[in-house]
Image 1 (cartoon, rainbow, N blue to C red):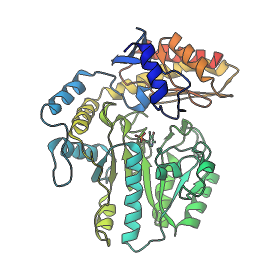
Image 2 (image 1 turned 90 degrees about the vertical axis):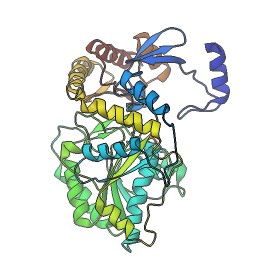
Image 3 (image 1 turned 120 degrees about the horizontal axis):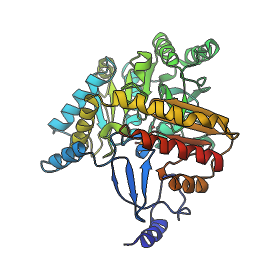
Image 4 (image 1 turned 180 degrees about the vertical axis):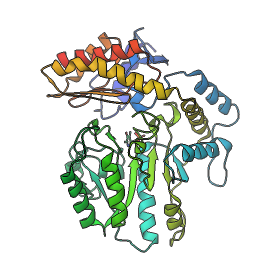
Length: 426
Ligand SMILES: *Cc1c(COP(=O)(O)O)cnc(C)c1O
């Protein structure tokens, strides 16, 4: 099929993320990807500034990941995980336990980030149920978050960005506190700590858990906060008998400059969700980790099992490529690549501070954000970035990048100049 035919069929039949049906804006047709470049049907090549939504940290067609996938496909692509097990999944669980903050010992493998959040919440609710505390089933979070698109994660997404008004009466009613004060480097605000203390204390009897994205709130608004708030959450949840869940689906695996964002705070949550970059962007897989205390609690319950089991749980292909991706991280290149990209993003985005339409410039690890004083015109933005030979996908008033860790300095510079151009024109 040629590109015109593909696009016509796409518009008629294929639903795209957050898109209308039939489609109104033609997407770009990608035919191949390798390294940090996407190749389009019309022959153009674009430097990928998005890592396919935080996932492709090692770039595309990485020889080690390709080889791991092919080797596993030659053995078995999938077997059910009920009653059966296999080395790729066992090795993956062990590596995740070793890499993650100390104290997380048990791993539930699942298919996507949203499902890992569902599992995290189910763990917390079952834990309290089995302790006879059936009233503890609400969640508390701060505004500005994003935790996925199935219903339980939606209930803890930012109420406005998540369109909670559309879902009144459908979504469970959770407890929201204001978004954490902005700035990774901004000293914690004692009055905000009081807000957290008051809300957690007041709702402790009905709260199963506090769930937050540590350090970086991603799709909810690309906001950064001081890690000190995470230490505060750890202390308050312990003091009030509430569990703490960190959603590191976006921040995990080096993106913020630490293997997990929780390390910036030196805090271990009771439950941790990972996903996105877990398989280096090759296949869909996520995981929910928990402490022995959570597992013991569930095992003492009326129903002494975790009542969850996706069909493709522990998929061997995804596990094998995840093991290969974690192996590349273990080689340690990311520890110099992420600060190198951070420096490139800081230098390249700094001039944006002088642009009249730019409200904020922020960089943390391999994440760069320009926030405008108006919503980005998406059609103009796409034309501008592709004209610069770059792929970016702004949303709302945000032009942002989280490039693959292997992005070279010249390509980082291409990304930042494309971002400046969008800020000037869209
Ligand atoms: C992307 C994301 C999710 C949802 O993951 P999916 O794989 O898209 O279901 C949840 N939480 C955070 C922080 C995310 O960035």
